[in-house]
Amino acid sequence: MNLDRRALLSGAAALGAAPLVAQAKGRAPNPAFPQGFLWGAATAAHQVEGNNVNADIWLMENVTPTTFTEKSGDAANSFLLWETDLDLVKSLGLNTYRFSLEWARIEPEPGQFSIAMLDHYKAIIDGCHARGIHPFVTFNHFTTPRWFAGRGGWHNPEAPALFARYCDRAARHLASGIGHATTLNEPNLAGLLGELLPGDLLATDKAMQEACARAMNVDRFSAGSALYVADPATFRAHQIEGHKQGRAAIKAVRGDLPVGVSLAMMDDQAVGKASLRDAMRERYYGEWLRAARDDDFVGVQNYERKVWNDKGALPAPADARRNTMGAEVWPGSLAGAVRHAHAVTGRPVIVTEHGVGSEDDTIRAWLIPNALRDLKLAMDDGVPVHGYVHWSLVDNYEWVFGYRIRFGLCELDRQTFKRTPKPSAAVLKRIAQANAL
Ligand code: BGC
Image (cartoon, rainbow, N blue to C red):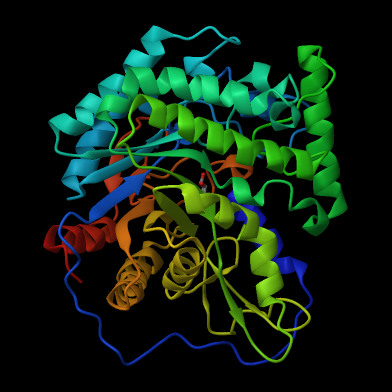
């Protein structure tokens, strides 16, 4: 879902022709990363597990109309092949695996918790430890149970408490083995996109959720992550409260477990007088960065930069490398986003996602070392960064875009589910194993 968010953000603003801010050149970083630095790859349940039939998004994929170009189906079959995935993480020389728990499996009906499903995720956590991998667990990555969406989702005043109850149950079963936890994935963009979307896409998204409400015979269906949000202020307030209550529930079980939230952040740069940069930063991350000040760390997920003048975002330079969606790929954006996240929160940063959607793996192989170089410069300047987790371990279900957009370090054969590392995986492996650039 995020790619289109980013693409829409790119297209949204008025365009000018001022020169773009250049990437910092010249200074060489100290190549060594700190001991214990987390080097990882990420997935999310709905995008890799397959047959996640009790999730809101599965229903959205299967109603008419739908904004989803393809159904998730078997995805990468990771629900069955999770051991293959862990072996893959290990073979890529990484010490961390970020994956998400599927709330819709753990709590298939309100208040009915599945011990078998909790045991499934416990086996993955144990499997990480058996391989010397640090389990980095997202409690909720976009999908919510159908019943939760059918009760108005995050619009429902009971939503924060419902989420906290799920966090409590999951934490009591799993927290002892978890290395780091995040509550929600990229909640900061929720409800902000309506103003930026072309009318027809937003209208289809709204009609899709209405079709889901009819299919479930409920008054209101509101998905955990959707383009159309009826009441963005309420949705947002409940998610922030859900994050706080969810974090408290996890901490009550294990106070020493580091808990944070992952935020979608661009690297926003200012050009000219009266640049919109600061206003945009406040709009897209302000409230959530302030909420993250009480967390143990802030998760930063970066894919792009935006250069703002007083009218809007400038177009990418003509010679820019571009992803499949046509947006600029600019290695310096990761460090820029990380610097801002730390400056506002004062918290240590973990890069919980960074990558590129492209069939051209040479772009990924170029992006990784160059982004890490600038990230290390930020660290040398005193920004505490504790880890880098690449999105994604394997090509997977890219939400409304289906399987067309490829973010994987490994290629996926959708018939045999065989995973094959791409050359970029060797680039990340070399750096991770050396713990140095
Ligand atoms: C999301 C992932 C998504 C990725 C690429 C991130 O914002 O967390 O679920 O696949 O972006 O768009």
